[in-house]
Length: 335
Ligand code: ADP
Ligand code: MN
Ligand code: MN
Ligand code: MN
Image (cartoon, rainbow, N blue to C red; front, side):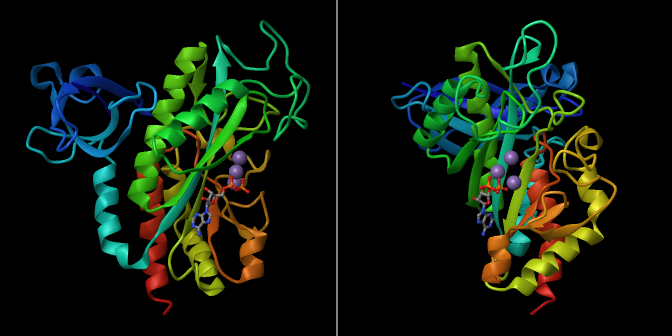
C-alpha cells in the first residue's frame, strides 16, 4: 500500500493556508478524486460541508520516501466546477488562451523562520540583532541562522523533482530564499505550492515555524517578497518585447498590486529595495523599481523581466495569471 499526501489550499482570509491529509492507495496510477470537510477550512457551511479534491500534480514524497507521493490537488464543488477559492482554474484558462506565446516564470520565494515569537537570530526575549548588512549571502554563526533547515529543504525539493534553481540567505537574519523555475505558469505555481508545503513540513522536524508574512518585523528590517521573473518566447528573442511587457505592466499596476498578497502596503514602502506600491516604475538593474530588467538582459538585448512587487504570501496562480493576462495581449500586437 502507498501513502499519498493530498495537499490543497484552504479558504483562510486574507491569506490561505496549506492543508493536507493522507490517503492510502494501492497504486498511484490514476489517483482518485477525494474530499474533505470544507466547514473546517472556511470553504463550506456545516450543512453542506463536502468539498472535492482533484489531483493536479504528483511528485515523489521525499519525506516519507519509498513509493509515497505528494499530490497537489485543486478544490472543486460537488458539481465538479471550481470552488470560489480555486485560483488555479482561472490560470488554466489564461494559459490555454496564450499558450502560443510560451510564457515562462521563475519565482524567488523569500520566507522567515521563527522560533517561538521571534525570528531565528533575534535575541530570545527582547532587543534586536545588529543592523542589516552582513546577513545576505553570509557565512558563519554570527550572521547565519537556520542553515540545516534550509539544506534539508533543498534536499527534499530536489528529491521530489521540484525545479529549484537556487537558494540564498537574505538581508534580515533568519530570512532565506529559494527560487523555482523557469517553468510554465501552471507548473511553476504547482511546484511552488509543493515547495512551500515541504518547507513547513521540514520546519516541524526542527521545531521551527515558517512564515511568508511580507513584513515579519516592522521597522528597519527587509520584508519578504516573491519576485516573479517572466518571459515569453518573443521576449527571449527581442529587447523590444521585454520593454513592451514592462510598459504593459505599468498600465495595469493597481490591479496587480491589489492581488499580489495581503499587507503589500507594509512591504512596498519605497525603502528596503522596494518601490512604493502606489507608483509604477521600471528600469535596468534597478532594485528600487517595481520591475527590474536585469543588466544581462539589457546587454544581451533579450531575455526576461523581474516583477519585484509580489509579496512572499502571494498566490502564484493569481500572480502568474495577471502577468500573462496583462502582458500577452500587449505582446501579441507588437509583431
Ligand atoms: P535575483 O538577482 O533577483 O536575486 P535570482 O537568481 O534569485 O535573481 O532569480 C532569478 C530567477 O529568474 C530564477 O528563478 C530563474 O529561474 C528565473 N529566470 C531566468 N531566466 C528566465 C526567463 N527567461 N524567464 C523567466 N524566468 C527566468
Ligand atoms: Mn533572488
Ligand atoms: Mn531575495
Ligand atoms: Mn530578485
